[in-house]
Image (cartoon, rainbow, N blue to C red; front, side, top):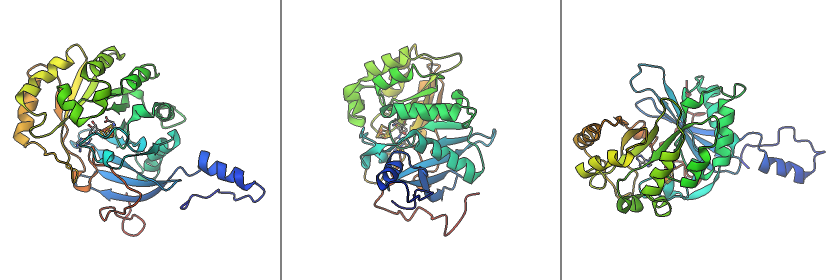
Length: 325
Ligand code: SAH
Ligand code: SF4
């Protein structure tokens, strides 16, 4: 049970009830375990859950330092069930859903221990948020509430690999968070290979769900497009991408693939990434390159894979070496 204890240890409370408390309503939802700081200032925190599992949360300062943007990337599951062939989280399989409390605690722990309040929250850590929508929705409402963290829903983003039934349910949530869709391919043939979710809901079904997703004024759906050398980074892909998104208020984030040991992909050259961006831009679609953040400490997109059975040397134990400030 680690360091999570029933705080009052009242011997008058029957043991079965105490055990039920620990299982159903852990009073310390997460125990901070370790922190790594990447060279670009990105910090990755590892937490242990009450049932001795591990999750990771990433705090990303603004790379341009123009504004004081501080993004927190939250995990919503231990591992992930969707098995995308390029993602580190997929390699650990599915453990369990996180509770809303465990999601919110990732934010509260950072606010209390780092001493800064994130300006933006993205559900882009470990797990598929629309596969745990009930708890994600509860977490969103706490994060938004003035008695909670008081963040505007415009600053909250839920990212999905393409769980269409979940997109339709998220569309009914109020206030509505931003939606990000991990597109990652322009044909079903390639997407089927990269993301098994596509065999359940293909590109046509996914884009139809995106089209019917309600958007307020000035809002767009973000399409994440991870670039893999020789797989989805051709000029033909760059021409097809804007055509697929026609009619959907969109912006595209290009993410050069972040290496995961053992996975058979390569990041395209910088020149290829820029050419791809320029070709997509010709179609008047806002398209940005997401510079990998925290990748020297496996803290970048898709590199989160905290395992219960390992203490990676790259994780620095806060208590013995350094403090987050
Ligand atoms: N399950 C959700 C949210 C978590 S993944 C989803 O798939 O959208 C967050 C983002 O990281 C997704 O856009 C995913 O395509 C991307 N990603 C996964 N592995 C990656 C890797 N190795 N390099 C770069 N991006 C990756
Ligand atoms: Fe899961 Fe998202 Fe990784 Fe796919 S990319 S395995 S859906 S976390």
